[in-house]
Length: 281
Ligand code: AMP
Image (cartoon, protein in one colour):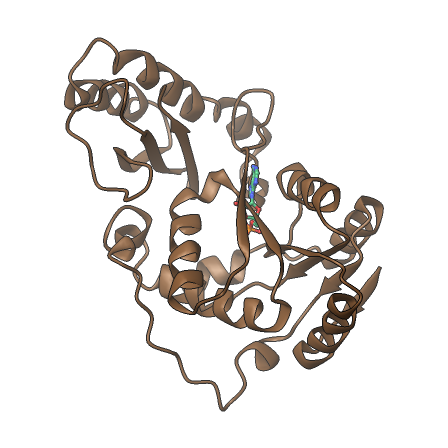
């Protein structure tokens, strides 16, 4: 695996692969890798000639300094995992190369996606995501880029940014990888105790129950029931639970068999934010 820190250098290398008609697949991450990240890499490798993974803890997408400080950064372990996974190039830029002193934030049109759910809960978060995506895609210009459904709203933001900046990479949405109790894997889960991890399956269970309830109950009642059952649990503060249209994230009041609905949830569990979602069927 080649490790590159300079954006100019990776851009040059990738151009030489492109000249040889190689397809380039890209998996952007913030490190602290787990099986969810590795599943994206596996898919990327199966669909592209060259697999690039980036690790960059993007300061601009953290709306709380403490969250940025606490973000795990086990870089040596990550490098071993990426080598074992067969990644061709690891892009490991520093802050100053992604955001040099000359960097000025471009106009970003997030199409209202920053005004709902994660956008409301974390002001400035999606502008930060948009900024880093614009930078990373400018240098890497992948044929395809791989993202986990776990961060569903983020995928819509990224699609919007690719459209705004006329970037023609294809986004591939990959399934959520879960622990055996259903908890979606996340780098932040390492901040939970073993006991908390064991009990955190309630989040996915609530989504599965909600998927059943919406068949017989009005959506607002189904949501209310799900919130009630979760809020009794120790350590749980619900930030939001919404049922929305998959393309626009506009909240839905009713659904039928033609609806393309998704339930999205965020809870604070013993001080750790847990996100999950489920396509309703
Ligand atoms: P992060 O390092 O948290 O920025 O995540 C990097 C990529 O991995 C994003 O596209 C995430 O959606 C994806 N990802 C994170 N957790 C999972 C998971 N449990 N299953 C599948 N993909 C995931």
